[in-house]
Length: 126
Image 1 (spheres, rainbow, N blue to C red):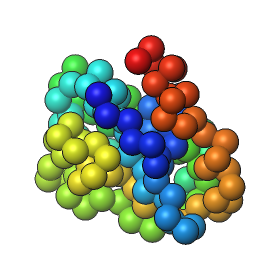
Image 2: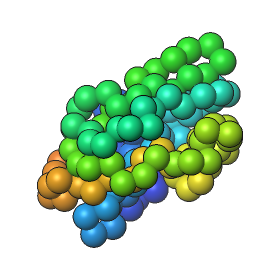
Image 3: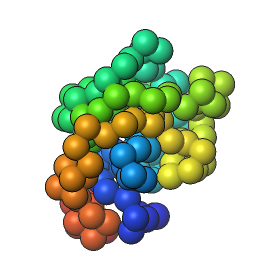
Image 4: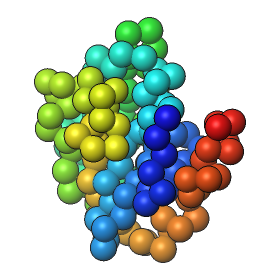
């Protein structure tokens, strides 16, 4: 399983990559493998802001539905348009084409409070 060192992670299995004030958010390789085949990502197209720790949508796999939790607070810049027709991108490329949201992070320093790769691996027993 892959846990890139340049990302930060939540205990709820989301990741964020910070570039300047822009954060790209998705779910981890571990999370997608636990969910199985992802068939739908449900995020309100009018979503304009997310709040750290709060659900911003759901992800549906063949046998389950899980909430997606915001790792940071911020203004939504983009929802990955490819996921509407190809939600399986999250299974095949969770850290690349399978990203879910891009946000303007309200407090970029808050990202450092999230788990690093080693702490996330420890959390999931890797």
